[in-house]
Length: 507
Image (cartoon, rainbow, N blue to C red):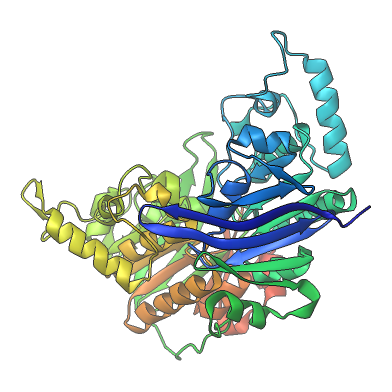
């Protein structure tokens, strides 16, 4: 019979030495149900899912699968019970093929891999759920969206009927989100049950049946989607009303701070031109939003400004000085700070502590350093100030930063760059992976520094974000700037046309 309870967690508590991550959580998942799990960064969502998947053992409490108590001590145990988890940061081996990743770790393959049979099963799964991926391609050759499909295929290949997706859209382009939702709806129709962790209320309203809200490690409410509004959900998550729209002070920024003049940039890996004859300027005291579908050159453009990519033609000037092809340290020293899109790979050192990560930019400067000696007393005070000011949830500032939630890592990265009070802040997806309260805080901070006559280049695929806080908006397509317009003079439809390759003067 459909809609029976397939998973039940009873009085789940998880204590770490410095904190209680989950406290007395009771949760039920039904057959053919998409159950969203909402909560602020550090609310305990991922910890709870890691318990269900056997990565952590609960301090107390029990888990039942189909009314029978289950001992889930390892992910292998979870797989035996039909539970599969797709992590926010993919667990794939890039040099291996799709097929090799799917069967990696399985004990029942024997000495000889039966590739023909495995490929047939992969094709059946792919056809059933529109997960078409070439099984012979290596992971590094796939887009992020295709890599996510591989993760889903992996858990389905292992026979999962309960799927846990930890912020599955955090790494996706907007155009890839709806196809993912179609896949989830098809799985639901086929009787599978899905736990969907997200920060995005629009996604919750689009795809879920039921919603559970965690706050500070406790489950505070479980509601049916049709019985609540986005505003009510935000209040349950945060305990207060959250602003979705901002009152932006009128400004008449005129003085140019940064000029990008006809630059070309080539890809390091493929040797192809990724930025072509780009012309752009940033005024003192403005937020310039750069919109575009992921992979159209926005990262290469700002990395050229930040000194991380070579400019092969044209030049970049800052306050009238040519800074083309200067080193990243030189760029930072003259007042340009950069928040990269890849917080783990480029922004933070995951094995180092919060203290070490907080001083990565200024470890060689006073008062953090005196000569070649780092003053850890000053470093600790600096870190604690950042943590307090930005309300970063961290139990131990000397523990590896990888132990923080993704959102709290992002907040630390943003805070570190902002604390230096740069004249120009380049922010690539600064609210990606943040809960609604943290997103509100970061957007307010960008508006605050803009009002203090600092400038921001904001890269985002969230058009609501771009439109709500930018003064001007530039759109990039295949490495070319399609046009620049004042934010109040352009709408989503026009931006969409520019993102598809139409020039502003042709509209």
